[in-house]
Image (cartoon, rainbow, N blue to C red; front, side, top):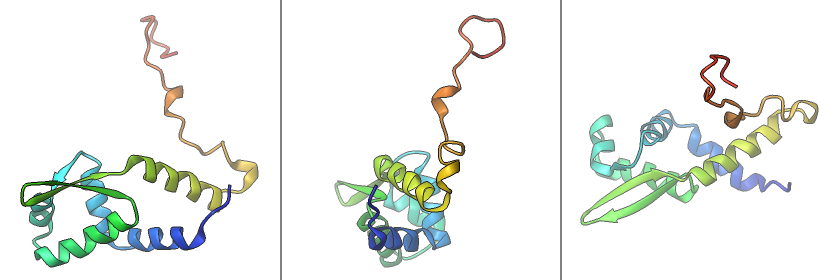
Length: 117
């Protein structure tokens, strides 16, 4: 996998702001109108626009216009790509796969025997 270091430096810079991290956290619950994000921070519209532009330009957030308002949601495909790339950057090759999240391994207990397999 060839990594575009300039692209990821830009993305990680976007992550470096606590307000933008909180916006990402808020959007993890689902799509939000810009007005709801603005209310949560009690910030001006230009300040919010600046942060949302950075998040959108990095490809982490997707905008959707509805009337005069913009609604935002996470770009899960891009965030998954960032997650995988970060793992390749910081996890030694010998350990890759060991620390991966494999949520599909957690199956619900369908037999009713309580062991969850």
